Amino acid sequence: MTASPRTIHLPLTESDVLVSARSLGEYTDMFDLDDADLGGRIVDCPGGAASAVAEICAAGGDAVAVDPQYALGGDDLRERVLADLDRSLAHFHSRDLDYDWDVRGGVVGHESVRRTASELMLADLDAAPGRYIAGALPDLPLATDSADLVLCSHLLFTYADRMSTAEHVDAIVEMARVAPEVRIYPLVDHSGTPLPELVRSVIARLKKERLTSRIEPVVRPFQLAATTRLVVERTTNRRP
Image 1: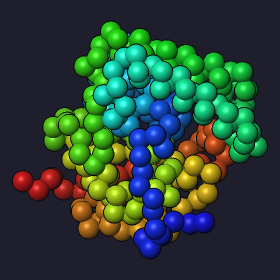
Image 2: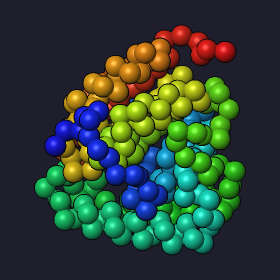
Image 3: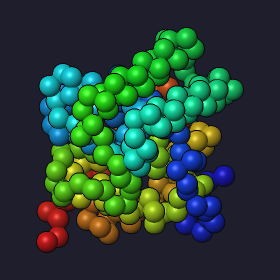
Image 4: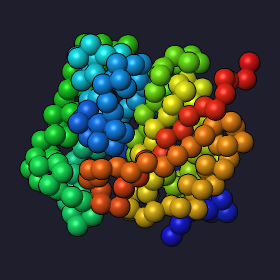
C-alpha cells in the first residue's frame, strides 16, 4: 500500500530499525560516489554498522557517522550489531527473489561482505570513537555547513509505515542544514513497495523550504525494486 499524508503511523522506535552493516562498495553503488565526493566531508546518517566511514578515513578522507545506537557504547553496540546482522541476513534469505544476488557475489559473498563491514566498523569505533556520534534525526549534533554531503541509507521511505510525511521532510531539512547536498536511498519501503505519492509529497514540501530535489537511477541495485535515489540540494544560501 502506498503511504500518503493521511496514513496513520505507529511511532518509530529504535528497536524497529536494523543497525545495518554495509560496505563502502555498497554505498558507492547506492549513492554513486565518485572521487570528488570521497574527497569531501561526508556524514553518514544513520551510520549503523556500515564500514563506509572507516574505509573512507582509512583512504585519507574525512567522514563521520551519526546514529542513536552509538550511545550504547562498544560492548552493547557490538551485541546489537551482531544480532541485527543475523536478523537482516535471515530477512534477505526469506525474500531471496526480491534481490539480485549476483550484485553481491551470491548468498555466501553477500554474508561475508556484511560481516566484514560490521567488524571494520566496530574496530574503527574502538580506534577512533570521535568519528561515531550519538544522535538522531531531526536534530543532529553537527554544526551548520560542517559537511559537503550527507548520505542517508535505509531509514527514510524504508520505514514509511512508521514515519509521517512531515517527519521525512523535517529529517531532510535538518540534513540539508549540515550539508548543501543530501542523497537518500532507497525510495521503497522495507517490503520493496514503491512510494510515489509519498515521494511527490516530500519533494513538494522541500521546495517550500528552498530545497531542490531530483530522482536519479541506481545502476546496480541489490534490492530489485530499489532502482532510484533522491538527491536534495539547496537552491539558495540558508536563512540567517
